[in-house]
Length: 467
Image (cartoon, rainbow, N blue to C red; front, top):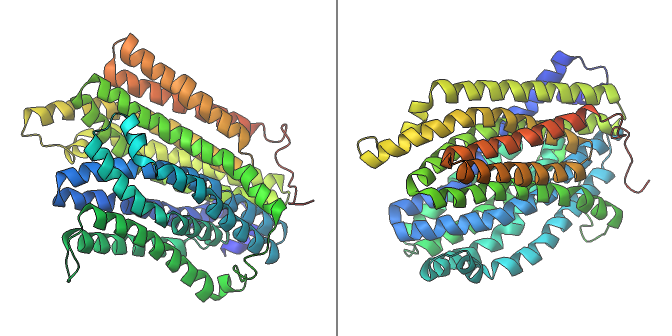
């Protein structure tokens, strides 16, 4: 049924809503599962040793910054595959070549990232970390980083099954990865079932093995399920297709930079909070965690928008493009309103999960976090609009200007106002959050405006690779 919707240019709005939700709901679950994998190591180490926990937290933050960038690069596979399916519904060759070159791009980006991550210790020292902490974090990274190629290939294959409108397979593999990572980390950190107790080193090994599990799981899907097997994805894997490789780089590098700009501005906000006091920093960590979990919903709708818009873009169906974008925006903004309402009317129960209200310090952090969460409710509306807008524009393979908008919105407006309100005006942490919300709102306005002007800007006609 989803395929019929994908290929019927006369699809009514109600059917488009069903098709978008059929894609988005598994993607939302997959995003939650991916987040769980990234936090499992830290949670288990917290029960093992607080020093190991500190080292792992720093290591995961640095490693994941590069992981987000490289994931942005291979995200280009999603709109390209969707457009090719829209252009020729039964195309096998073009889809196979796009997946192949996306895997090539994944392997290419790993080399410079490895070279940088191998210097993790001096990098962390430059950021003012304690020498022993920097050394232990670097040891974690030097093991975990070898799982990056497997992680990226798994991401490419997840985008492949999503572009074929079968995202549930990727979710199933990711959920399996959550369970595998938790078990492997628990066994290797504490030394269960006859394995040696490896502590922090065990968590790093588990991290790399979990990424290998994810890749093998997705390979089993694409080789084992008849619908995917017919594409013979890895036939003649050595054969180059330089125009397609260049297209992935042209579309993917701006996405990667956009991801990095958004992530680093929130990392910078952590440093600003640390310059105020520990209570503000702790409250920020709580509020940003709540906002990040809520963000998984519009993020899934954004990923669905890329596929749905890309399918109609490949058909050169301007009406279908408009309908897919309208539905994605409507669902994204609606979901954001609902999530914002929860933050406004139930802030206490949300924040109470993270603090000990019996202590004076806990009560102080609780009150500050509540004030941050009020701003996060507005923040959520802007974040939902901008991420769905970015996803819809990616479906049109428009990524360069959204990257520029992200740089201007997050760093010029967002970070600039965070500094102004937080330190010059004296609003401290609340001022920092006002700045972040303003930056997201600016990006949302710019993304939405560009989407509304897509016909005037000539973004809708599809140009095949190599044509």
